[in-house]
Image (cartoon, rainbow, N blue to C red; front, side, top):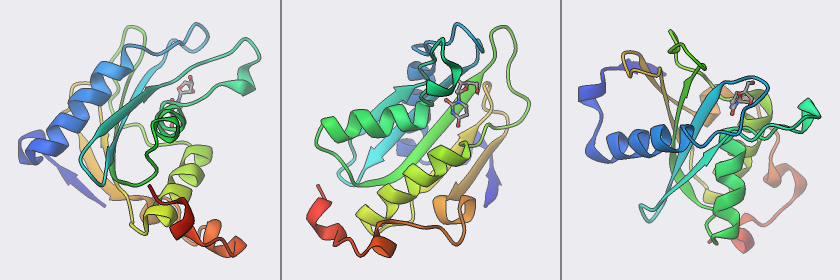
Length: 158
Ligand code: THU
């Protein structure tokens, strides 16, 4: 886990964050008014984005990260090497980079076992003044995943 300056990100990391930033504006967030954007980078360098989608029955809310993962699945993509996440409030910028919630960490971990890769996660404040790079294994140590269920992950790789 490390802090990094925006200018030290690679071109693809900057692109990923830019796509997450665009997706953030598509949040459906009438209840929290909190905007979150996520962008997944596939092993073959395709970017697939998501934004949070809320519901009047609050608990049904889908976070940006899971929205991106679900969208990617329908697009035939299950293998990722990186994920960028950015957030903002209704009328305020975040002071600290928002990290994925526990449910999202569990789903990102599933994807990491399918890909056989520890997914890099780029977390950014709204104005990109604080950026953290970490991995899903760091965010969810000692995790439970498809391999623990005896799943042959190679069958689900695409
Ligand atoms: N949210 C995300 O989209 N991702 C996270 O990892 C944390 C929370 C969303 C869910 C809800 O729409 C709003 O942020 C406030 O929790």
